[in-house]
Picture 1 (cartoon, rainbow over the protein chains, first blue to last red):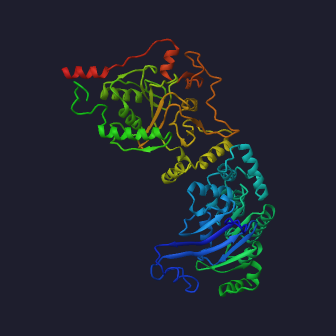
Picture 2: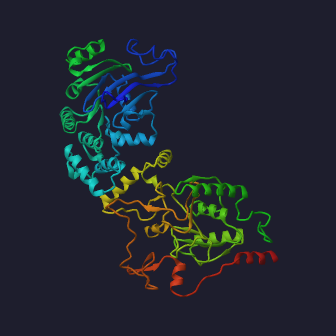
Picture 3: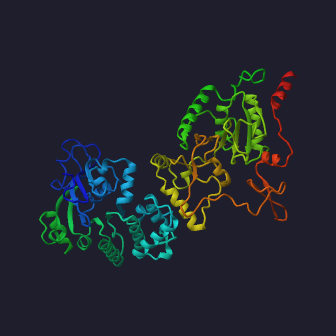
Length: 282
Length: 302
């Protein structure tokens, strides 16, 4: 029997991130029941602890919670932007899910990032290099995946920009000259350039005005329908979660307080904090 | 030590002290073992200012022996100010024979050119490098470039070439065109023109590069693969001299310097001065042997 007998795409086990030096009681003394991330004994900060979940191919998982709840930290560790403190993650598309991706070498991590994952950040400056043109940004991903033919790179980049509704004639302009919504769409093009099976979306619509938000969300939903990419959507905005996700994890003070089908959580929240979230939405 | 000379008691052979030579030679061995990899080294300052070939001198003075025949060129010319002064200095400090003749030299120091004449297995060529880091133009932080080299993560470099192609229709890197050495490290071949870049590939000679300001050494050993970075459909090209020829010799197959006359008309001349002499059959292989040491002796006798 292999590790992956349930056909998950991503399995995360006890993912933990702690800043500072914790002691044995740090995890016991923090969390939602204490309403605190800071260990009173050591002053170490528990950004997130004991995060475990499975993600299935083509599924959209939402992570919702207030700011400081550790939701972005989870995604950033999985995308290797942050080093984990403890925990494991396996990706079925990589070595048949037999290898813990968080323990791999930097080169292998970069391979996984480029071929098997995509990331859309809240701030386009984190995901795009503003010194390069938007086409160049997409080319970076394609080149890292071994594409060495400029003609093919440009063809693929213009396809992607067309798909994400960025005017293709602006391919050779720098993203700094674009509007916020367009920058976000270029970032999405870059993230999906190598057809990854997994995409992370970290607060993608925060900071955009409402009509642009709706367009970007539409685009993401369309891409999900067309390409069947599995996604992890991080947001504090329940309407985004409702619109995009199949399943949701509710986080508070670095812990998962509730998880389940999105409809179920929105209709019938069990945990106190989820109830607060849902009631503040309505 | 330099024998019977005025400074015999003051300076070591080849100016640099033996401990520093040992340090630089050890780092050179490491550089040769890892073709294209930049090796940091330490040394005292040289008696010339930075940017005037201190890195090249560090290497030259560490590898030079009493039997070496030394040649130095600056942009192809044996007679430029920089070349003349460094030639005097090396001759002064070692007593080695110096020459203009590329074929005769066993150790050649150069700035911005490789000699037109093909180099042989018994020769070493030393480059003065102003900017050793090829990734500096895409990444300003040293820690980042070190990591990029360590992990062979060169995507930013490739994107900058892509950007150059998109903006100008060609890859606009004129001199110091980045090369991939031994399929592992991207290296800046000091600012040699693109014309010289193919001469690094599978050459018979040992190429040593010294950057004095950054204190970095790197090397291309003989018979090593050196490939200019190129895309499948956008290729590396050497300078186009199809319309030009040397006005002195009518020769076309060499790197040409462009000269402007007062009336804005252009003419071209072969950049490698020794090669130009050989082509024009002048037989001007100036033997510089110990000229300055003779002067010194005359001074001592006074």
